[in-house]
Each structure stands twice: as C-alpha cells, then as structure tokens.
Length: 293
Image (cartoon, rainbow, N blue to C red):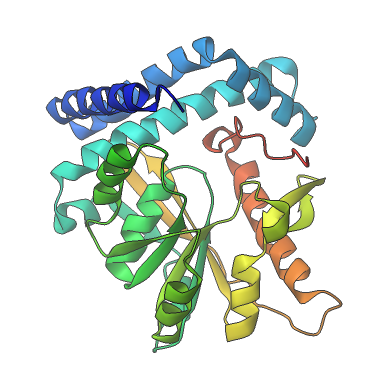
C-alpha cells in the first residue's frame, strides 16, 4: 500500500496518545473512556454498524429493531472498553492484576492442565478475551495463543508486549505448525479464539446461530489427535474495573462419529453461541461472520 508508512505512523501516534490518556485515569476510568469512545464509533462507523445490525437480524430474529440497535451499540462500547482497559492494565504487576479477577469454574482448567499432557483452551471475541490470555498465562502456564499479526509492525510489537507480560506466548497463525507441535509435545497449552470466519482451506462449515459458518478446524483436529478435551474460558466485566473469569465444563472429543472434526468443531461453536446468548452485547457483531464467499 503506497500510503502505508503514513497510515502506520498515524495509527502509532493515536495509540500513544490513547495510552498516555488512559494511564492518567484510574483503571475504572479507562472503562468509562472506552465505552464513551465506542458510542462515538457506533455513530461514525456506518459500514460496521450496518454489518452488526444485519448480523443481529440474521442470528437473533426475535429481537426487535430497537433491541438490535441497543445490542449493537453495546458491542461497540464493549470493544473499545476492552482496548482501553488492555492499555490500562500495564500499570499492574501480576499480584495486583490477580486481585482484580474472580475465578469461576476454574476447576475445569485445573483438571485439563494437570500433568504434562497438552491442553486446549477456547475463547471468543467476547467480553474481555485478552483477560483470558492473562489469566491462563498466570495460572496455567505455559499458554500459547495463535494470533494474526497486525499489518502495522510497530503497533503489533506494542500490542504483543502488553499481551505477553504474564506467561502468555504468541504464535503467528502462518508458518506456526512446527513450533506449535513442538510445544504441545512438551505439554504446552493452546488457547484459540474460535468465533471468526477463516479461509475455506482451513475451515469446516458448522451451524452458528442456526446459519452455516466457516470455522477453524484446528482445535478439533489437535484435541482429537491428543485425545484431550477443550475447555471454554471467557472473561466478563465486573463493577469497579474488575473482571469475572469463567471456565465452563470441558467439551470431550469423540472419535466414533461419522465426522469427528466437524462434530467437535460444531459442539465448540455451539458452546460459544450459548455464551453469546447470555450477553449478546459483549460479542463482536461488527465482524462479517457469516460471509461464505
């Protein structure tokens, strides 16, 4: 892209400005700032707003128009609050960060990660998914997360530094196979976000809110290979700039079905859908999830 250096410089300048602003606020103020910015983004980003509303009409037809707007607006506010709070977390050391969490159902993570075998954790772009990486990195290390690097390399390095402060390790999706296998063989834990559309070559098509959706088959293939269940983990906002990290019962792989990979992927996606239905305003509705072409 011809103007990429200019764009990247502008993105980095905005990041630094926002980071500086967040650091002079109390942590709870970072959430309020983020939600306010999300309200503005909902008004200004018309194309993303249209995608969010269309997705809601497709996935949750029981909602009336006003409710769809309320959920979509809440989604924008949640996404920007997530960003400002991630920047704000840099002020805390590990002990202070742990005091901001309430763990619910963590015995499911403990059971999956005991011993030296590989373990598989799943989350989604729901609530405070970066907090899932921080919590599992601290309490169930070593945890590897598959990520797509940002197009802006300087911004990507800044974000990676925030993500990897407490035990989480990042592996880029492209060209990661050998490193991933080596770490799993050594008893590593893999954290995957399973709710976004992927390229056809990497996907199986399973129902999501009753509609076919291209979904990564990676975690299902690995869980079946290692005969290890998948534990869903999510992070919810709590009052006062705090969080509730929730682990749900493990999803066990079953190899005696007609299509084990599709079956396990479908059950994992169904678990994500169940979580989203609890608080639809916390999910990333502005992603074009059901596009098949």
